[in-house]
Length: 236
Image (cartoon, rainbow, N blue to C red; front, side, top):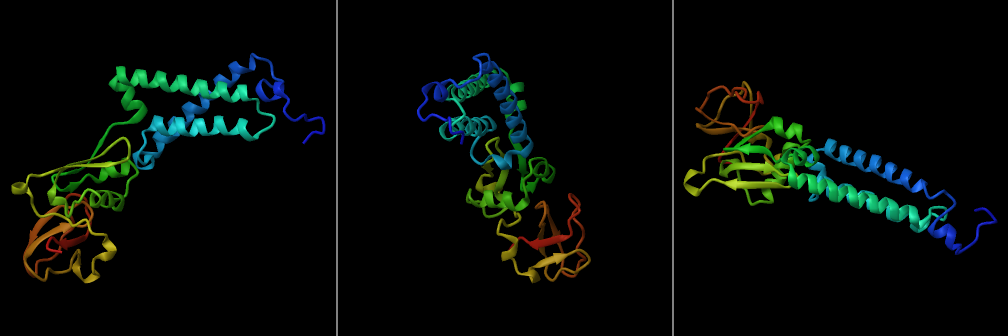
């Protein structure tokens, strides 16, 4: 540290040596970095959001940086940090106002819920779009007390990254893929393409949950919906 550095120099602490007009540059820099943070968070997909929306995560990240630097960096005036925090707050309030006024802006900034299960079938293309693995989905469904996909009418991946489930009424529940982790399934219980069925029953695709009846000694096909070649008896 420079020997001329003076402890508790109030001018350095609060204002610094930069001209006051530099505050406008701070606002501009903050706008660019805040916008870039929102862009990257949208790029990560809903799965990376946890329980926060894109804007909530963006303001947490921005506040953390803007508040932290003036706390420990002796050459960072408090006024600069306060300007950045104020700018982030204004951006946040403005975006929330626009989101409340326009559905299109809301979709652009935060995305929209994605349908990931419909009538017991996993929408694999939507999982890929939202950067979500099948195991992530099954983990979320287990947290909603789902035992198998046949119970589900519709399931959505919300903009917060959480899975919400709409259940079939009991009388409409049908056979479906178990949500048990695959490593808990004995390898002998998994049927692969071109092998022969050992007992007549309803079998489900282990990738998308598509179900089909198969007879004893019938050759196991590829899934007609997703092309997957592994099947499991729904009784498992």
